[in-house]
Length: 323
Image (cartoon, rainbow, N blue to C red; front, side):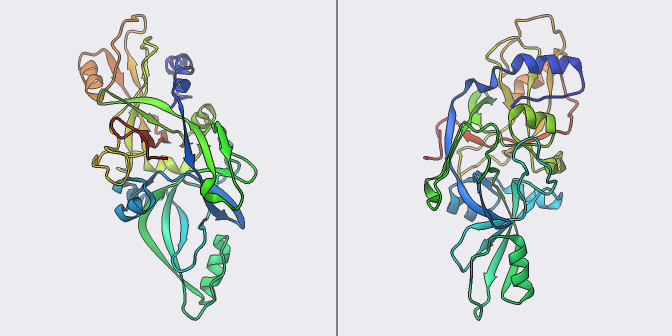
């Protein structure tokens, strides 16, 4: 992740210097899930769920604190039909995909609402929120909001893809074979190397720099408990320096046992005080950041209130979901 437009010349210069680093990692090809929005097919990737049973069913990472996003108003709505086979329906998408999104209601954090057809009704395919609400008004189905939140960034429509996509393969009518290839970004957690994808940012400048969806709703999760911390390091000339994360799923998937992990990251800048010195150590953990701060070698913060959605998809000893 490249953090842009922090309001100091120092951080801006450091970010420019880091611009060529983040893309040095390999790519990952992920399955696309087909959904409906306003009568049209859209496509998203499914990475985390706040409910263990949902994570088990989908093969995604269990992150219980994502449900906090409901309390702070950071979610959008996804409708799951319980007794008729069809794609899920969402109430918003980034329009257009990328940093130019103008829909303030879009969020990759979806609160699940269950849609159940009444026994006396004849189910039909629903492809929009308006159709769902009309059927509810007619007494044909019931809606049951849940406290379940899933992280499912919208990365493609029939007309466009998220700007940072490397490749997209959409097979009409064959959703299970549709894929997207996204760049991986290296990061450090507790001295180990991990990789994450980057899909949304609450700041339009960050979204433009990273080729991700501008999502102002994500800012509502800042300091909420739904997020973790990511530390971009500025002033270290070591080309191997990467962003430092305070947690990662261990392992990736429904068996995650790290209660601190979240794909939502509060951006916390770390800046070396002496910008002239160039032989600083490679920082690979938050413990190192704390030590350097105590020695007055770095400053930590202030936080600009930027939140990014960067699901960790590779960690040591559990390298992929098995795609």
